[in-house]
Image 1 (tube, rainbow, N blue to C red):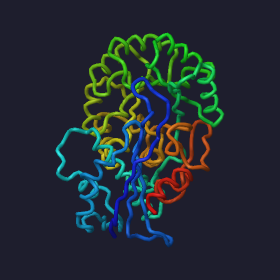
Image 2 (image 1 turned 45 degrees about the vertical axis):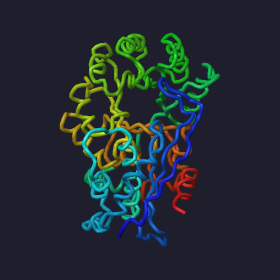
Image 3 (image 1 turned 90 degrees about the horizontal axis):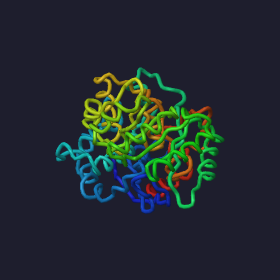
Length: 388
């Protein structure tokens, strides 16, 4: 049993949308195929992966460093003999050989993308959905049958007035979502409040709306928004300041009693430990948004969940960023609190399997081996073209 080849390509997910910090006019992502010598049901097993939006494709890093490390490794050193399968932990260790600690920027995305494809292959070799494999290995066989999801959108867009924003949010409700998320910080405070009120007119309550500043604010602005947002009783107030400014996050907690969320731009278990030690996050109400595809993959994610447990946090307080099927499997198999969803943007990577409808804010799980990419036809076409 061995990995024959790892292939990668960069694809465009560009669109004219923007959040408070960046636009997506030139956004790309990497797609990876891990080709194995294993055959199941008459077909060679290929594991697939991609990185979440916002961090661009990582092909150069993969080609320059990471792929050669797997190609040059003893194939037997990458095998989990006890389970007659590939060993994601040994593969991860090989990818990260000769890498200094710290510096969790772009390399964490490159490794996380490859790691996703490895786990897809591992579950396919085992003949089970990834969520089932994770539940069996790490949660005594107990998986969630459905996962809570919210619809992320509300981006700034040329010509997008309040009527169009309301139409967008109404469309999410029509598709079964109960909680939606919108961007703030890309307009003056008064305009953002008017946008928030327009969305609440559609979703019915601030408890059905989360807002996301994408790290745009300094402390004074973050506090000003907190004071303006407080009367609306929102689902959460997300990433007000720079993700590494733990002092800002901790001070903001003194001015905002309602739930806050952050973590999508933290990429290691060490970052998680620092946030929970120094960021003023509250385990009874706040939310963590670590994204495995951006943070060295599931191998590192398991370490992150261990750090959370050591510091008194439940995995139910994690709702991963990214809106992808990998996080859906992790959420179900490892008992997280839910998953983000992109029903309309970042296609074909956003959203879930074609036959899985959102009902009452929850989505079911793919029943095919692996992550379930093959059940999302438009995405699988992109992936299959790489493997073939």
